[in-house]
Length: 285
Ligand code: DGL
Image (tube, rainbow, N blue to C red; front, side, top):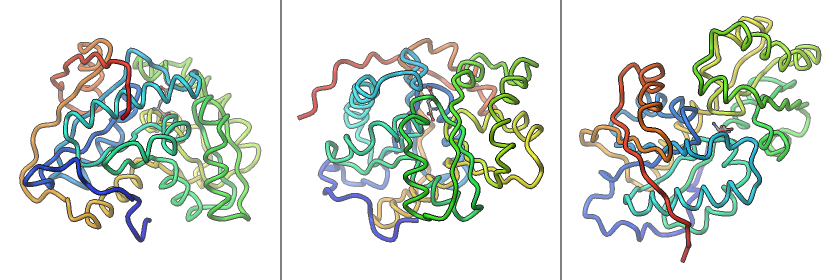
Protein backbone atom coordinates (compact mmCIF):
# COMPACT_ATOMS: atom_id res chain seq x y z
CA UNK A 1 0.00 0.00 0.00
CA UNK A 2 1.05 3.61 -0.44
CA UNK A 3 2.54 5.21 2.65
CA UNK A 4 2.37 8.71 1.16
CA UNK A 5 0.14 10.19 -1.48
CA UNK A 6 0.85 9.23 -5.11
CA UNK A 7 -0.47 12.65 -6.05
CA UNK A 8 2.10 15.37 -6.60
CA UNK A 9 -0.18 18.13 -7.86
CA UNK A 10 -2.53 20.35 -5.91
CA UNK A 11 -6.22 19.73 -6.05
CA UNK A 12 -6.90 22.96 -7.92
CA UNK A 13 -9.70 21.31 -9.85
CA UNK A 14 -11.74 21.73 -6.71
CA UNK A 15 -13.03 25.18 -6.42
CA UNK A 16 -16.01 23.23 -5.07
CA UNK A 17 -16.85 24.00 -1.48
CA UNK A 18 -17.03 20.34 -0.58
CA UNK A 19 -14.51 18.29 -2.58
CA UNK A 20 -15.40 15.25 -0.44
CA UNK A 21 -18.74 15.07 -2.21
CA UNK A 22 -17.20 15.07 -5.72
CA UNK A 23 -17.46 11.76 -7.58
CA UNK A 24 -14.70 9.27 -8.30
CA UNK A 25 -14.29 8.51 -12.00
CA UNK A 26 -13.91 4.86 -12.97
CA UNK A 27 -13.30 3.70 -16.53
CA UNK A 28 -12.64 0.64 -18.64
CA UNK A 29 -13.16 -0.41 -22.24
CA UNK A 30 -16.39 -2.19 -21.24
CA UNK A 31 -17.81 -4.29 -18.41
CA UNK A 32 -14.41 -5.21 -16.93
CA UNK A 33 -14.38 -2.17 -14.68
CA UNK A 34 -17.62 -3.36 -13.07
CA UNK A 35 -15.44 -5.77 -11.05
CA UNK A 36 -13.76 -2.66 -9.62
CA UNK A 37 -17.10 -0.88 -9.18
CA UNK A 38 -18.39 -3.83 -7.12
CA UNK A 39 -15.36 -3.50 -4.85
CA UNK A 40 -16.03 0.23 -4.45
CA UNK A 41 -19.60 -0.55 -3.39
CA UNK A 42 -18.16 -2.94 -0.78
CA UNK A 43 -15.22 -0.94 0.50
CA UNK A 44 -16.29 2.68 -0.12
CA UNK A 45 -20.10 2.69 0.04
CA UNK A 46 -20.30 6.47 0.54
CA UNK A 47 -18.52 7.45 -2.66
CA UNK A 48 -20.40 8.74 -5.71
CA UNK A 49 -19.16 7.15 -8.93
CA UNK A 50 -19.12 8.08 -12.60
CA UNK A 51 -18.44 4.97 -14.67
CA UNK A 52 -17.32 5.24 -18.26
CA UNK A 53 -17.16 2.24 -20.62
CA UNK A 54 -15.36 2.98 -23.86
CA UNK A 55 -17.35 0.32 -25.67
CA UNK A 56 -16.93 1.96 -29.10
CA UNK A 57 -13.22 1.10 -28.91
CA UNK A 58 -13.46 -2.32 -27.30
CA UNK A 59 -11.29 -4.38 -26.99
CA UNK A 60 -8.35 -2.26 -25.84
CA UNK A 61 -6.09 -5.29 -25.54
CA UNK A 62 -5.34 -5.54 -29.25
CA UNK A 63 -4.67 -1.84 -29.77
CA UNK A 64 -1.43 0.13 -30.05
CA UNK A 65 -0.06 2.31 -27.27
CA UNK A 66 -0.78 5.44 -29.36
CA UNK A 67 -4.47 4.46 -29.67
CA UNK A 68 -4.80 3.65 -25.97
CA UNK A 69 -3.15 6.94 -25.03
CA UNK A 70 -5.55 8.88 -27.20
CA UNK A 71 -8.65 7.14 -25.76
CA UNK A 72 -7.41 7.52 -22.20
CA UNK A 73 -6.70 11.24 -22.64
CA UNK A 74 -10.19 11.78 -24.08
CA UNK A 75 -11.76 9.96 -21.16
CA UNK A 76 -9.71 11.87 -18.59
CA UNK A 77 -10.55 15.23 -20.16
CA UNK A 78 -14.22 14.27 -19.93
CA UNK A 79 -13.77 13.11 -16.34
CA UNK A 80 -12.20 16.47 -15.54
CA UNK A 81 -15.24 18.22 -17.02
CA UNK A 82 -17.42 16.10 -14.70
CA UNK A 83 -15.38 17.49 -11.76
CA UNK A 84 -14.17 14.18 -10.39
CA UNK A 85 -11.88 14.23 -7.36
CA UNK A 86 -9.95 11.11 -8.40
CA UNK A 87 -9.91 8.53 -11.19
CA UNK A 88 -9.41 4.79 -11.04
CA UNK A 89 -8.24 3.27 -14.31
CA UNK A 90 -10.23 0.08 -13.91
CA UNK A 91 -8.36 -1.35 -16.86
CA UNK A 92 -5.00 -3.10 -16.85
CA UNK A 93 -4.29 -2.30 -20.49
CA UNK A 94 -4.56 1.46 -19.90
CA UNK A 95 -2.71 1.15 -16.60
CA UNK A 96 0.14 -0.67 -18.37
CA UNK A 97 0.31 1.50 -21.49
CA UNK A 98 -0.89 4.98 -20.53
CA UNK A 99 -0.86 5.65 -16.78
CA UNK A 100 2.70 6.94 -16.47
CA UNK A 101 2.26 9.21 -19.53
CA UNK A 102 -0.97 10.87 -18.40
CA UNK A 103 -0.57 11.03 -14.63
CA UNK A 104 1.13 14.45 -14.65
CA UNK A 105 -1.29 15.91 -17.20
CA UNK A 106 -4.30 16.11 -14.89
CA UNK A 107 -5.04 17.93 -11.67
CA UNK A 108 -6.52 14.95 -9.82
CA UNK A 109 -4.93 11.70 -8.62
CA UNK A 110 -5.13 8.77 -11.05
CA UNK A 111 -4.78 5.21 -9.77
CA UNK A 112 -3.98 2.17 -11.88
CA UNK A 113 -4.56 -1.50 -11.11
CA UNK A 114 -1.12 -2.96 -11.84
CA UNK A 115 0.91 -1.79 -8.86
CA UNK A 116 -1.74 -2.75 -6.27
CA UNK A 117 -2.13 -6.12 -8.04
CA UNK A 118 1.62 -6.75 -8.10
CA UNK A 119 1.97 -5.86 -4.41
CA UNK A 120 -0.81 -8.28 -3.51
CA UNK A 121 0.64 -11.04 -5.70
CA UNK A 122 4.08 -11.08 -4.03
CA UNK A 123 2.38 -11.50 -0.68
CA UNK A 124 0.70 -14.65 -1.93
CA UNK A 125 3.40 -16.67 -3.65
CA UNK A 126 6.70 -17.16 -5.43
CA UNK A 127 5.58 -18.71 -8.71
CA UNK A 128 3.20 -16.18 -10.16
CA UNK A 129 1.12 -16.55 -13.31
CA UNK A 130 -0.51 -13.52 -14.93
CA UNK A 131 -3.30 -13.80 -17.47
CA UNK A 132 -3.78 -10.59 -19.44
CA UNK A 133 -4.75 -8.97 -22.72
CA UNK A 134 -2.17 -9.18 -25.53
CA UNK A 135 -1.18 -5.51 -24.99
CA UNK A 136 -0.72 -5.90 -21.22
CA UNK A 137 1.21 -9.15 -21.57
CA UNK A 138 3.46 -7.64 -24.25
CA UNK A 139 4.13 -4.55 -22.13
CA UNK A 140 5.67 -6.72 -19.40
CA UNK A 141 4.16 -4.31 -16.87
CA UNK A 142 3.26 -7.02 -14.35
CA UNK A 143 6.62 -8.78 -14.53
CA UNK A 144 8.43 -5.47 -14.05
CA UNK A 145 6.25 -4.36 -11.15
CA UNK A 146 6.43 -7.75 -9.41
CA UNK A 147 10.17 -8.24 -9.80
CA UNK A 148 10.85 -4.70 -8.66
CA UNK A 149 9.03 -5.40 -5.41
CA UNK A 150 10.34 -8.95 -4.95
CA UNK A 151 13.28 -9.93 -7.21
CA UNK A 152 13.30 -13.62 -6.24
CA UNK A 153 9.86 -14.51 -7.59
CA UNK A 154 9.20 -16.09 -10.98
CA UNK A 155 6.55 -14.65 -13.29
CA UNK A 156 4.83 -16.18 -16.30
CA UNK A 157 2.51 -14.02 -18.38
CA UNK A 158 -0.04 -15.46 -20.78
CA UNK A 159 -1.83 -13.40 -23.40
CA UNK A 160 -5.54 -14.30 -23.60
CA UNK A 161 -6.98 -12.53 -26.67
CA UNK A 162 -10.27 -14.44 -26.73
CA UNK A 163 -11.40 -13.76 -23.17
CA UNK A 164 -12.65 -10.15 -23.44
CA UNK A 165 -14.88 -10.74 -26.51
CA UNK A 166 -16.31 -13.89 -24.86
CA UNK A 167 -17.06 -12.02 -21.63
CA UNK A 168 -18.55 -9.01 -23.43
CA UNK A 169 -20.81 -11.45 -25.35
CA UNK A 170 -21.77 -12.99 -22.01
CA UNK A 171 -20.54 -16.44 -23.07
CA UNK A 172 -19.22 -17.35 -19.60
CA UNK A 173 -20.92 -20.74 -19.46
CA UNK A 174 -20.32 -21.66 -23.08
CA UNK A 175 -18.31 -24.94 -23.39
CA UNK A 176 -16.08 -23.14 -25.91
CA UNK A 177 -15.04 -20.66 -23.19
CA UNK A 178 -13.99 -23.55 -20.95
CA UNK A 179 -11.81 -24.98 -23.73
CA UNK A 180 -10.22 -21.59 -24.45
CA UNK A 181 -9.54 -21.12 -20.72
CA UNK A 182 -8.02 -24.60 -20.52
CA UNK A 183 -5.57 -23.80 -23.31
CA UNK A 184 -4.55 -20.47 -21.72
CA UNK A 185 -4.04 -21.98 -18.26
CA UNK A 186 -2.24 -25.13 -19.39
CA UNK A 187 1.28 -23.61 -19.63
CA UNK A 188 0.84 -21.97 -16.22
CA UNK A 189 -0.35 -25.19 -14.58
CA UNK A 190 2.66 -26.97 -16.13
CA UNK A 191 4.95 -24.41 -14.47
CA UNK A 192 3.27 -25.24 -11.14
CA UNK A 193 2.29 -21.66 -10.36
CA UNK A 194 1.11 -21.04 -6.80
CA UNK A 195 -0.62 -17.72 -7.57
CA UNK A 196 -2.64 -16.42 -10.52
CA UNK A 197 -3.25 -12.71 -11.10
CA UNK A 198 -6.28 -11.52 -13.03
CA UNK A 199 -4.29 -9.18 -15.28
CA UNK A 200 -7.47 -7.85 -16.89
CA UNK A 201 -10.46 -6.47 -15.01
CA UNK A 202 -12.82 -8.50 -17.20
CA UNK A 203 -11.40 -11.82 -15.99
CA UNK A 204 -12.91 -12.03 -12.48
CA UNK A 205 -16.21 -12.51 -14.36
CA UNK A 206 -14.72 -15.87 -15.40
CA UNK A 207 -13.87 -16.91 -11.84
CA UNK A 208 -16.01 -20.10 -11.74
CA UNK A 209 -14.54 -21.31 -15.06
CA UNK A 210 -10.94 -20.59 -14.07
CA UNK A 211 -11.36 -22.03 -10.59
CA UNK A 212 -12.72 -25.27 -12.08
CA UNK A 213 -9.51 -25.69 -14.09
CA UNK A 214 -6.88 -24.62 -11.55
CA UNK A 215 -5.37 -26.87 -8.88
CA UNK A 216 -7.05 -26.04 -5.55
CA UNK A 217 -3.85 -24.69 -3.95
CA UNK A 218 -3.43 -21.92 -6.56
CA UNK A 219 -4.39 -18.57 -5.06
CA UNK A 220 -6.23 -16.03 -7.20
CA UNK A 221 -5.34 -12.35 -6.92
CA UNK A 222 -7.93 -9.82 -8.00
CA UNK A 223 -6.26 -6.39 -8.37
CA UNK A 224 -9.72 -4.76 -8.13
CA UNK A 225 -9.78 -5.52 -4.40
CA UNK A 226 -6.39 -3.91 -3.91
CA UNK A 227 -6.79 -0.83 -6.09
CA UNK A 228 -9.90 0.08 -4.09
CA UNK A 229 -7.93 -0.38 -0.85
CA UNK A 230 -5.24 1.94 -2.31
CA UNK A 231 -7.97 4.40 -3.30
CA UNK A 232 -9.32 4.40 0.26
CA UNK A 233 -5.88 5.20 1.58
CA UNK A 234 -5.40 7.97 -0.97
CA UNK A 235 -8.77 9.55 -0.12
CA UNK A 236 -7.82 9.52 3.55
CA UNK A 237 -4.38 11.02 2.93
CA UNK A 238 -5.97 13.85 0.95
CA UNK A 239 -8.90 14.08 3.40
CA UNK A 240 -11.43 13.89 0.58
CA UNK A 241 -13.37 10.80 1.63
CA UNK A 242 -17.13 11.31 1.40
CA UNK A 243 -18.99 10.93 4.67
CA UNK A 244 -22.38 11.92 3.24
CA UNK A 245 -24.76 9.72 1.29
CA UNK A 246 -23.57 9.01 -2.28
CA UNK A 247 -25.32 10.03 -5.50
CA UNK A 248 -26.59 7.12 -7.63
CA UNK A 249 -23.83 5.79 -9.91
CA UNK A 250 -23.83 7.51 -13.28
CA UNK A 251 -23.04 5.23 -16.26
CA UNK A 252 -21.85 6.47 -19.64
CA UNK A 253 -20.58 4.58 -22.67
CA UNK A 254 -19.20 5.52 -26.07
CA UNK A 255 -21.03 2.63 -27.82
CA UNK A 256 -24.49 1.10 -27.39
CA UNK A 257 -26.13 2.01 -24.04
CA UNK A 258 -28.77 -0.78 -24.20
CA UNK A 259 -26.15 -3.48 -24.59
CA UNK A 260 -24.20 -2.15 -21.65
CA UNK A 261 -27.36 -1.90 -19.52
CA UNK A 262 -28.08 -5.56 -20.22
CA UNK A 263 -24.60 -6.67 -19.13
CA UNK A 264 -24.92 -4.39 -16.12
CA UNK A 265 -27.88 -6.43 -14.94
CA UNK A 266 -25.79 -9.59 -15.11
CA UNK A 267 -22.80 -8.19 -13.17
CA UNK A 268 -24.40 -5.64 -10.86
CA UNK A 269 -27.76 -7.25 -10.12
CA UNK A 270 -29.68 -4.19 -11.34
CA UNK A 271 -30.25 -2.61 -14.74
CA UNK A 272 -28.29 0.61 -14.80
CA UNK A 273 -29.45 3.72 -16.58
CA UNK A 274 -26.82 4.25 -19.28
CA UNK A 275 -26.21 7.33 -21.37
CA UNK A 276 -24.17 7.59 -24.55
CA UNK A 277 -21.37 10.12 -24.62
CA UNK A 278 -19.30 11.14 -27.64
CA UNK A 279 -15.80 12.08 -26.67
CA UNK A 280 -13.91 14.43 -28.92
CA UNK A 281 -10.19 14.48 -29.65
CA UNK A 282 -8.39 15.27 -26.46
CA UNK A 283 -6.26 18.36 -26.45
CA UNK A 284 -4.58 18.56 -23.11
CA UNK A 285 -3.48 22.01 -22.06
N1 DGL B 1 -10.60 -4.70 -18.93
C1 DGL B 1 -9.46 -4.13 -19.57
C2 DGL B 1 -8.17 -4.61 -18.95
O1 DGL B 1 -8.14 -4.75 -17.76
C3 DGL B 1 -9.49 -4.01 -21.07
C4 DGL B 1 -9.74 -5.26 -21.83
C5 DGL B 1 -9.88 -5.00 -23.32
O2 DGL B 1 -10.67 -4.14 -23.71
O3 DGL B 1 -9.16 -5.66 -24.09
O4 DGL B 1 -7.17 -4.78 -19.60
